[in-house]
Length: 300
Ligand SMILES: [Zn+2]
Image (cartoon, rainbow, N blue to C red):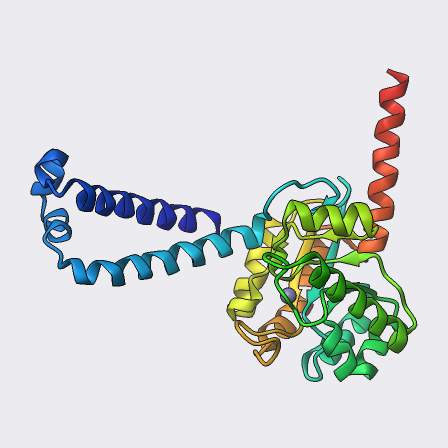
């Protein structure tokens, strides 16, 4: 996931620098042998009117690469951000963007049949739209977490907007399910230091990201989902799936592949000796592990 984007971004950056150098210097011979090779020659002879279009396309490419990269890595300070659990044989399965009237009930059926508890990061508006499903998530013992009210990106956003997104979702979860949660997952995993300070330090949320993305939002096959999970899962991993959502809109994409992959993923994780727990349970064990480590440190 990471490497192709880095290669593409680097290639774009090199191209951009070459073009800028050409435009500023207007002397291709200054770039020596580079100007004599065919693709570069084409670049140097380009009509200036087309340059703008190329810059716009490159800009869009860079932006896409940037967003894709930070979807997995976050922006800014990482204090108080949870990306993984303790170093023991536990994993947490998490679902984003629901509830959804088609896929969430199927996922809940599978989890019930397999005896697994998971965590659902819900969109406030969807909780209001599908209250029965939200209630079912909580009634069946799963964790529920805040994923903003309208699946709004928190970068860029004003402080007021971030708080409104978080609080409105908390209120609707509480009103409909009776549950309250301090778990928060920013849409696309994008946050800034300012957002982290506001939500973690001031508001007391735990910012929960993930260790392994199933990339099910790309509509990859169930087998590909299983392969990715089995290749990347390590003790303490937080696994990301989607029970709703869509690439541009808030909901509407098919999650059939996620539903189909889930029983295979659960069986695979069990066979590997992993216990599947909710994020709250994982955080409890993580704290235990940290306290133990601190105890050992004090004794030493
Ligand atoms: Zn999301």
